[in-house]
Length: 405
Image 1: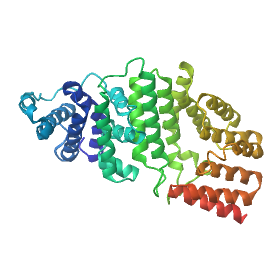
Image 2: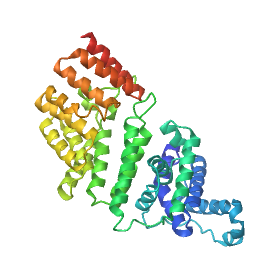
Image 3: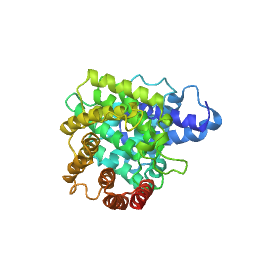
Image 4: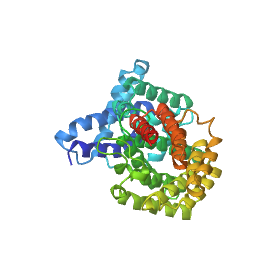
């Protein structure tokens, strides 16, 4: 294996193992993380040309260890430690560590002292193995912005005295919840980009799924971890049919369901079926169950909307919020008619007044009710607030089409 794509995939898999090995050996998350990034860059440049070494993990650990010493030597505030550092033995390549540090690293990157934007950036870099430039391109922000977020995040972690260890039993639920939220946000940004001309940023949704898989391997009994992975798989399975050849958005009702990823659907359904059977029900499991009902239906008309409404009612009790209520309103409309659905959206008018999905749902329900003039206005308002170009174009087109009727 020497192709650039194969090497990139391997490096992303090995990144948390290598970083975990260095931090456990030397301490100092921030310096070790910088060293690992440089080792990953060296491998990304060299391995496609020279071939992958027999022990890639050991090669990365050795290279990162040497780079860490160089970084320490170059820090003027630590020059007095130079002799001690120089005396540290850089071991020869060794087998992959037996300990899986994925959860430990994810929990550290999602430390409560960090902002959500910093948690996302640090997670993608330290655990995902993405370079700063890659993260910046994915989120359409300047590379300097991402670099500042990562630098500040590592400084905050250091100032907070956070230790490189698995979350203690008492703090584990909260830390796992934070990790799941960050992975969920990364996936959503990949599935529907918040800005730019492309609807999807596949590199982000794929990375979120990869990290969720790793987390599920470490916490196989956690129902919410399984639920989030299932939700990602069932949602991403629809992506191939979600845009046409020109990149224009295709709504669920018009998608060619034969283009959906059957393997991802089967895996997602198996995951959520097991999670709902064996674990206490949480919001990610319920969202995955809703997604499962959608993908199991042959068409929108064949969808079991009564079951979806029941799941939304439970989700609204477990994890209430305006967007959950908006989803429930659609299910209400499909079960009880558009007037009932519109009435359910009325109470959301203030809190979601500037959210494009609120106006898009209103437009859809008004169109169902036959009020095409009001539907066109709602779609136009939705287009005004949409920040993704593909969504904006679709909503503008809907407004014109409905008004043309």
